[in-house]
Length: 356
Image (cartoon, rainbow, N blue to C red; front, side, top):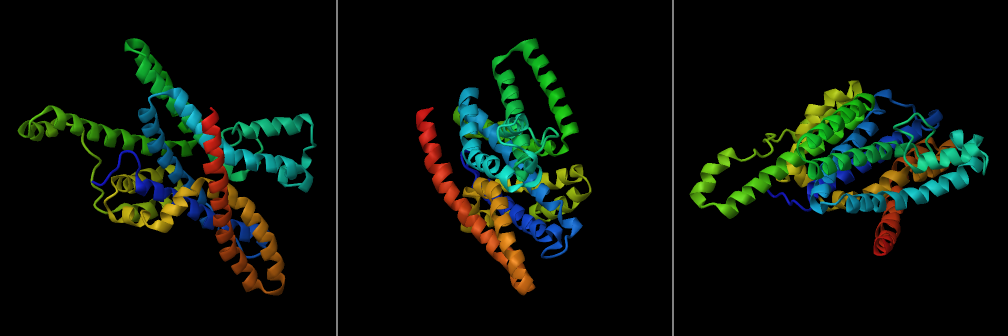
């Protein structure tokens, strides 16, 4: 394997692939809005949520890795807040500054300074819409609600398993397992976090035990003891990409159908040495992985603006109007996301970390 336990280039690339696919599926949705540019194809609508579920797999793997690496709930919480909030908060303030005045969707009913305004402001600030049936300002931020819930539950599981002992530990984990099961039953897409968590636990345990055996045993003993070591991730027989396609199609019928096939694909990504991993390590995909968070949050704002221009262009030339949204929309989204990454995710985050 070529796995790097600290930074997996394939997983990083998968972020970028998932983000750009979400952009293109939202381009379809934007164009089909009110049939202004083209007619909506119903079967395509499920693919954007499916791509978000790929993000959940990635989060499951990386959050488990981060908790083990830092061995501190305080550091984990600080890093998550600094990672998530800067970009989100900028867009959040823009939405609540302009949304009511522009009459954007449900925000047109809000009056500045009213109780409803502040209720909506703080509910969205705390990522409550998505998990709860509340009006959401940034439509694609529903996934951040799932992420926040996962962070909390993952932190509690880690804290319980590392600080408690004996009966108290077992009871605590049983209670948390019941809560997690209820959460998955209520919000079915949350199950995809477990794919990433499972892959990390299996993979990290195998690497840890292999390293311990090498350090403490002779070569002959290592060979005999490896049979008893925790097994590595299984071979996918290079079925990752076909499994991903099947998972996407299956998800359209029910999320649970996608689980075994997406698991096969993600296992292949984690192992880094197969065909799908080579694609994900391409420079362009890696770049998209770097700006993926900004791209995911910002692209609806950009596409909405480009769409308004495309609709006007389409009045005189329908083909040119469609091409404006299809080509200009993603390109401008990537450029704005790059700017956001450099200015907010890198520079602003560095300043915040230096002060906390």
